[in-house]
Amino acid sequence: MANFTWTLIVLSTLGSITAFGLFLANIITTGNNPIILWVQSIPPLEFLLVFVALLILVGVLLRPKPHRRR
Image (tube, rainbow, N blue to C red; front, top):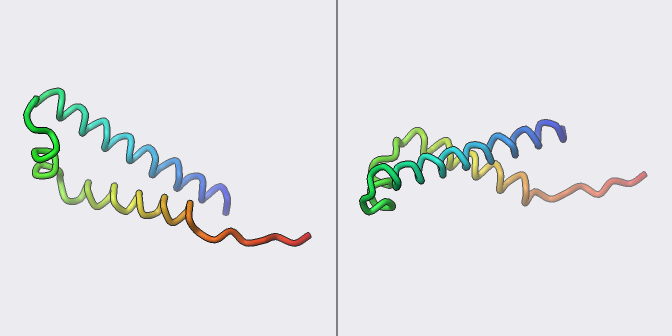
């Protein structure tokens, strides 16, 4: 289970980095008001994927940890 959890963490981190990289590239190439244009031009599917990845990441980090007894 731990491997699956770390896989989710790595994938969501990579997704966030990719989205941020596209965001920066858009700022650099257009040079216009970046935030408004980016929010208007972002594809809904990509936004949904990043949002789901962030939700999964937050859920994994904040979930209650079971106390193990030996």
